[in-house]
Image 1 (cartoon, rainbow, N blue to C red):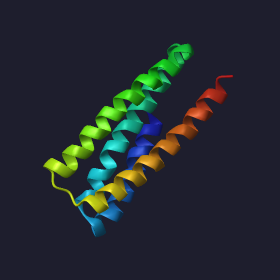
Image 2: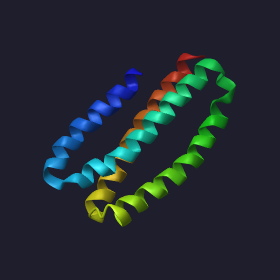
Image 3: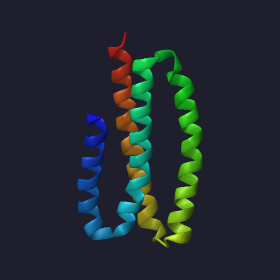
Image 4: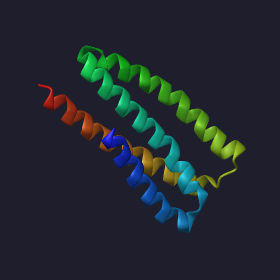
Amino acid sequence: MKPVLWLASVSAVSAALLGARFGREVWIGMLAPLIAASATWTLTERIHRANPGQVTAVMMTAFAGKLVFFGAYVGLAIGVLGVRPVPFVASFTGYFIALHVIEALWLKRLFVSSN
């Protein structure tokens, strides 16, 4: 659980700093990537402890779920919440890349440590 708290803390602090200048779009752009990275990290870590052979199948299923989740989230944010597209997309993209790179590095460490 420690990694998820770390992700949330760093994301919240950076969003607070950036949000002061660019508004709620930064927070809304940060939320979905944070939820997705936290959920997949937690799920993958649990599956890896229980049955390492299932990790790939779980990650593929999570990837498909993320496609649907992110598509719906972006549509909701722009279409329903009426966020300004440019700051929202910049925030969403930045957090998406940063959080998933961090998750990938943690996964690498998890897989190496189990060998």
